[in-house]
Image 1 (cartoon, one colour):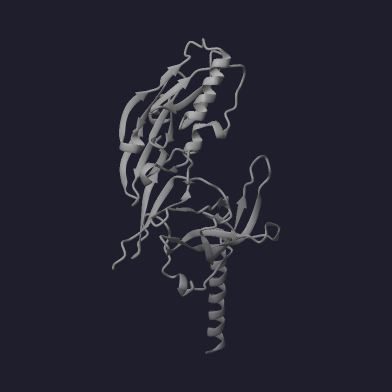
Image 2: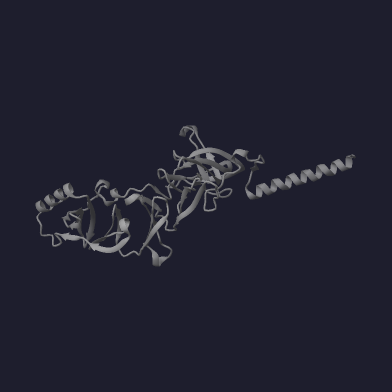
Length: 352
């Protein structure tokens, strides 16, 4: 090869290198990793409704846009599960909720859409209890799908009972009722602490007037009877104990920012973005998945714990990646990493 040809080749290579560098600077990518993905992770899939597996079925069981209200899952009567989600899609549906009932196999067996009419719904075992200022009613939808309204028996509506009588009645009801809770309300600058209880197969309300603001503790609220097992929209950069981080395949080096909020200034980070690979189990069988566009950080001050962030593009604000899974023993699992989506993962029937 003569000198002239070598000069031309060198010139072309230099121009190409400069052009590629300019492109990288232009799209915000500082460096790209050309190393291939390790074969051990080649068959991992992104965990979404497109997940396909010989052993597992992944289903988008609920999707809701009612931010900031999360999708929540509650255990229910007869080994059932109830999913609660905000059904708001417009101003006309603001305050509406939808409930899904699942059986022990993870199949939806019933759906209940509740148009907002000033009531707050509480799940209490067999019952769905609805309360507002003026009245209360309940249904047995969790138990048998019946949405017939059954109204509470009302006591001391005229507020004629003495304080001693009210207190004695409440103490007796607490000692002999399967369920009881308080609700604090105000009306026309008057304050009331309404006592709700279930006794002798009858839901009842006892009115009592109180002075000033009253705080109802968690131990005396209706919410203590319906403890959620998982909700969407949680933000914790550290991984849940029932999910194992396996590997981070670096793809692009870039800059992104952390916005702290609360009036505190944010800061920029230069780091690698790529695919993060994880392992968990469903019904005692290993389940693998990956998440794209993940940056992994760890600091000595934090015990070198890995923190995971979604970086959508160069110079973007990082979003905390929080994968959560709740495993129903000997059955399926609920999974979420998105405030608007809840997935159900279950093992396909094993061949004998």
